[in-house]
Length: 434
Image (cartoon, rainbow, N blue to C red):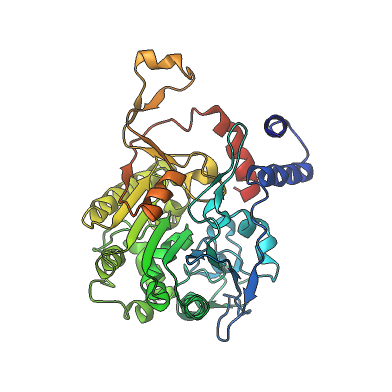
């Protein structure tokens, strides 16, 4: 089976027709993630919940005998104008502008979304599938269709700047949807021992922004937060790098109506204070951020439409400055972990918990090799001179061991020089559409 998979991967690098390639790519990804999940999902629709286009919001529940609950916030962009909400802007707009289908959980995104949902890190050639800490947990899966990181509370009319289309009425109803699902979870899972609230990209942002409300509603014995690649950076001043983005969404999504309910440790004039708030309000919970320094997806949302210059190098520089300040802030709180690898070519170094954990590892002392280290893997000029911690190990230490883990990997080309990554990344990126 491993040899067949490896030959299939190599075959996919050969030129093929576009339609055939799409089938092959999804087929290979299906093998890579061992078919994704085939859970029995229960569709839940609740009164008053809706997607951005006004259609009924739907979330999905997977029930097991576990005392633990995964509350998964799906990612997929954000929107605050006609182009980004209507779908015209494409990948940098909001996901699912046409709503959520009844069979959503059998479609690509939800089926393959994350090892955390699927309960296992997928197998690869010469590497076996590995169960992870969330295996067999109950799951509340929150699809994303409101463009407001699951936390907006506004109905807006967005005008088509080209004049070609009628104004778009858009419902930023993420807050209503999230609260309804959290209350449903409390009713259906009344005695949760471990609650993990997590999400990636926009869902990572909502993990931090909505944790206070979700955790209060479900009231588990122990709470865990993992924000994957949706950092809410510090922005206390008008000239702060992320302040323009924060001001835009604060207005478009009517965030004052939501965040006014938070404790005084949060300041609406610095959305990054949400990190302090969750750390101090829940001092016995385990909180974490993970994401790549070379992220070139979420970083574009943060700066591309607000800053000049906005070329790729400048955006990376803005991100690094914000990330350094963010890490310094998290260091103030004993219950905050971080796991920040430098780069992987999958999804433009955006999100470390989606699809596969390959390349989702971090080393505090990733350094250029000494001359004698080239005997092993001579194509690789970088080596870890401390402990190479994989994502599955981080999750185990963080959730099962209740350990604080802090790794901020220095700049390196370790994943860039990995031959397997050069084959794998284009396949996954093709399946993701990126």
